[in-house]
Amino acid sequence: MDYKLIIKDIKSKKLEKIYFLHGEEPFYIDLISNAIAENALEEFERDFNQTVLYGKDCDLLALLSELKSYPMMSEKRVVILKEAQDLKQFDELESYFDKPLDSTVFVVCYKYKAFDARKKSLKNAAKNGIVFKSDKVKEYQLSEWIQAYVKSLGFGITSKAGMLLAEFLGNDLGRIVKEIEKLSLLIEAGTNINEIHIEENIGISKDYNIFELTNAIATKDGMKAFRIVQYFEYNPKAGELIVIIPNLFKLFTQLMKIHFLPNKSREAVAQALGVHPFVAGELSNQRNNYDPKKLAQNIATLHEYDLKAKGVGNATTPSGELMREMTYKLLH
Image (cartoon, rainbow, N blue to C red; front, side):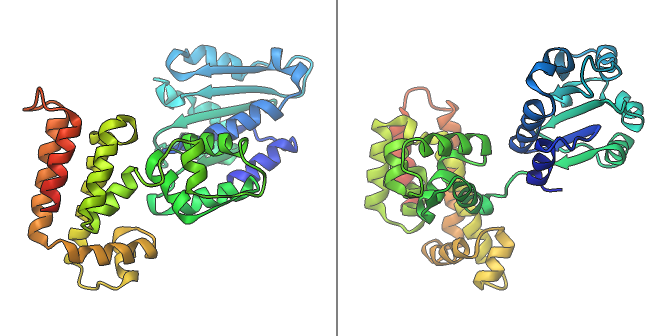
């Protein structure tokens, strides 16, 4: 079931006895549990009828006592179990999921991993309520997700601005949403957000960022690469070596895979790498800049500088100098 439909029903007071929310992406779990906390009960009912517990600090007997208590001056009672994955006796809730109390709305926030679908707890929860699996947005879908979210707020966004946000903030929907909502307060409704807006209001340089450095190295634009490296040296928070290295490792492993694909069409590359067809086309062009032997050398170089960045075999060389050395070796 789509999270938007779940939230729509919650706001209409169409409540289930169980909401079993689980999966790797915490953003949707928080979104649904917050909607229940804010809409299931009227404000005056919450003091006596809404309880929030945390798995790590929760005692099973105390939890069951809350679940089986009847509401006071209200039709419903809400019990929200946050960080449910930390509850040691979680499997012992199986019997409650099988026979939940009609007057209790039990919200399970089981984060950062999917619950085992083979277990009876999940099957019982699905029988008596809603089970929602919150999956991570795949990297190649992140820019599209950002565009859709921005549109839902009444704005537009350019492809480059979306890619900048995705590259800089990573696959953290909560952080992305926070930055977009902050930006929405600073610009006029209906604005088409571009890289200038991102640079001025979020602090991600449109020209000097990890995305642009990766692209400069991919296209063997040495002058641009070293300009960005110099910028990072004077602005360490804009591009840390331990963050840059995984991005370059991803680039070179993708280029290596393309070299050995039997079908090198854009569609085949997109499917093999799990990227957008446009990105697949760019990578296919960049592959011509590096033969497999050089790619293998570059992957070894990245491993070497990853260790140095973490202090292994390096006690004195500053990060900026390591970055320059590494960039030179990758390009030559």
